[in-house]
Amino acid sequence: MKLATVLIEGTARLAVLDDVGETVALPEGCGSVDDIVRGGPQALDTLRGTLPKASRRPLAEVTLTSPVNRFNRDVLCTGWNYWDHFEESKGKREGQDPKTRPQHPTFFTKGPDTVIGPSDDIAYDSGISQKWDYEAEVALIIGKDGRNIAEQDALSHVFGYCVANDISHRDLQRRHGGQWLKGKSIDRTMPFGPWLTTTDEISDPYALRIQCEVNGRLLQDASTKQVAFTFEQIIAELSFGMTLRAGDVILTGTPSGIGNAREPQIFLKAGDVVVTRVSGLGELRNRLLAASGD
Image (cartoon, rainbow, N blue to C red; front, top):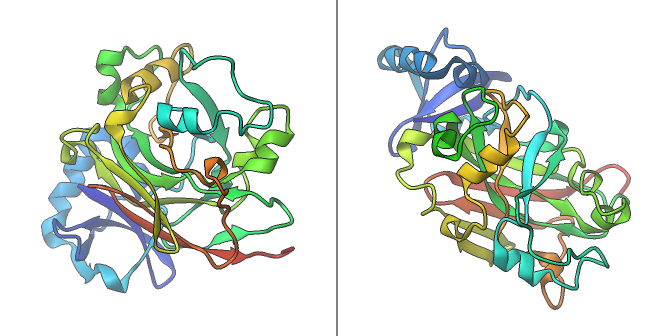
């Protein structure tokens, strides 16, 4: 099932996409996507029961927003999770290269105010950063609480998947002692969506193709089979001594092709159009719009 949040006359509504992605059903009385995620299988069953009587609209007539909007905490993120990406950046981290490949996943967070919808403008401000970079990623949406989750049980805690772009500000990322929070947490800069695809629709999460285009030029093109640490490992490591909650969002890392590692480097600027897609999960299309201060 593909769950979306859409705007109808300025009001956010839960919507369910049909199988061909052309229309949305607008069920009544089921709450929001966030409610369904936290309600688990019973909430999904109730939702399915409402669909035959739900009103419908063409997808083209509604505006998609971020599918989830009620965050428990910061967005949880994984760095260096594709070895080709780790290797491409060697010597380009301004003295912050690790001595060896990480033996465990590398984690950081992004503030929830970074999140924007699948077609929203990215708030570009060159006064904040001169080095705006793109990072196409698969996001996991946790659907069941858990602590010290075993790898073999990890995917049972995942409700579904989304597409994300971890827009990064490389100069800020390097400026603050080697930690990444500030360079990853600028408001209104993380495209997310376009809907939430439940796990039953993805037969193999390691057969997803990830792509990122800037102004029509394909700059990232990889498969989730290339991950350094599996989704199960990420969940197990994150939940070690730390409870994951239904509704938590986890980004799983970006493959090679980032702008900072290219020669010459490619950084985003006002007017650029960034398209992020993952097979089976949909596409984001966002323009960088000069914000106040630029």
